[in-house]
Image (cartoon, rainbow, N blue to C red; front, side):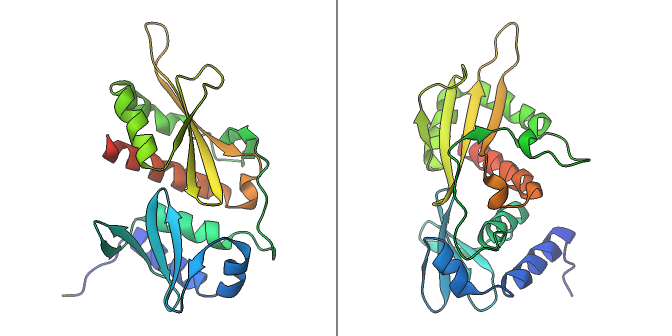
Length: 208
């Protein structure tokens, strides 16, 4: 019996085929990644990954076992971070943070509403939330803008984000905000910021 592919699976395969059209040696010259004849190696949200140089599929390493990753948000984010920038040299970070609204695109709204359900969840277990952040490779930083938690998270070794969290009280609900380097649009498409945010928050939820 033939297995029916979901639309997400179809898009994953399309992304994989697009990756195979790119010059892999140029990608390796651009970004600080290890590689051999079979694989390009990348750490994504503190998870070791490898990208096949023959067909573009992505494996994740868990408990010493490599398993193919079919998560739409994960694979599309990795493909974009490898392929989006077209110049011969890697783009540079500005080291200044901004909200996703800084990159506003007509017809697409801010991602804050999506994060509300996670803010409530994290508010119930603030220490667990901080622990989950560190398990994703994050570094808890000095408080910024009055946030109760500020955590710098390396998405890849060359692309970080900043997660800020304010606990709720009798006047205000908990708030979660993901900040981006002002040059983030040199690293990935605007739409990919939503894939990445969803992937990051889902992983934090699983680690709680």
